[in-house]
Image (cartoon, rainbow over the protein chains, first blue to last red):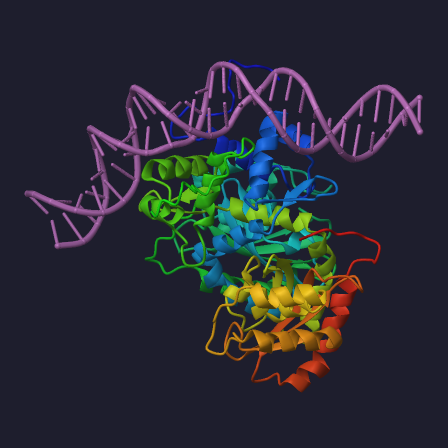
Length: 269
Length: 269
DNA sequence: TCGAACGTATCATAGTATAATAACAATTAT
DNA sequence: ATAATTGTTATTATACTATGATACGTTCGA
């Protein structure tokens, strides 16, 4: 509990509604390894006391944001969470613009295709077109991964200014997803530097063993990329030269055709 | 404003946190035709006064649930909305079970494949695998449609008891999406009745003109279906007999193989 | 340049969220 | 079976927090 001069994690701003913020914590308590939570588990994960958890969970349930199993009394996400994602996709103009190109690309190369966007120091997959042997986690939009550990993140970073690249390479988080995830920041820096000229990144074994990913940036030429198109393939069937021959041209073509017109200002962090 | 004996739309329960409920209203104010909203638009759409809207919007922004364009001062959904959908998908065991089968089916028939679940009197698409000429709205999970207007909804309804079917056919909502959307409840009733024996539904022109959809239920034999697999195809290239020959068997096979084991109890409304 | 519409900031007040407590139900161990 | 334990639901006085009216700035459009 380490009471540290009352940080309380709540801004004492009068424009800040603590009750709402606390309620959101319940929503965020759910993730891939916490798919349904009891009241006390919720309390534990949110750091709220029993009563507060009870009130918020009850409110969210009444508002249709949480499902409640009458048998087990456990809460779980409701369909409303999907509806929010649907609304999001309409608000993100890039998704609409990209979708037909992504489908085209996916059909052409017959492998998994993703659209990733930068989300602070992470990337988030906003659209995923899974193929035959795609992992479940890789078939659902909304997954967030450390930008430095993904080809999409690296290729986006390569479009940044030198200083920004350096701070990012120094400070952005890394996580050892596999035994071969690159944790050496210098090696990542090399890849990013190479990508400045090449305009693409190929990475191996970062998220899953024997998975190779290749990414090209979506950008207004001369500006920072805020998105990337990425393909995931099996390392066995796709040596780098085959990727460069059979995927890269189409990938870059797709990425370029998605890129907004040079005059439009799409301001997404 | 029609003050009706203070309905206030808020339960005066002590386990109900009004502030949280109001905050959620802001989230729900966004949809496909309201992708970014100014403060006053938000106030208008939520029915909250300016100050309340200000406080909630600000809180949601600080909590990373709303993006704010510094130029236009307009709010829009954040990436967090996608993350919630990601969490949802992990919580819905059906999605994980279905995904490989859906991919298989999609590859085999080369047409758009959807997984739909019942959500009260609507269906919601929880997984969508778009193909070449798929409409944007049809390529994103989370869309909710009146159950009676979709083949998925109709085929699910066909697994219900006679009484339940009748009340549903009488009370569930309908909406004329196209000039040829079926609004005649008797005709829908016929289709549902036929589906009781056939085990599938084929519908035409309901959501989009010249679109034909076909759906088979995901169910434990003898129990009510709570999900369905659906294909969308062009009416031009897919007359009904071709659908029955080249799609139906694989569709039903996929739906059956997704269906849970007869003993498991998956309690999703 | 002006005016109107919109966003931002401030503050006293009331009302609502709070958290402690108690009653109740459902597991688990004995 | 029974008891003990854990977890969930219900109740209430209190204090704090959300409230919304108001006033101030800013940004548009005329």
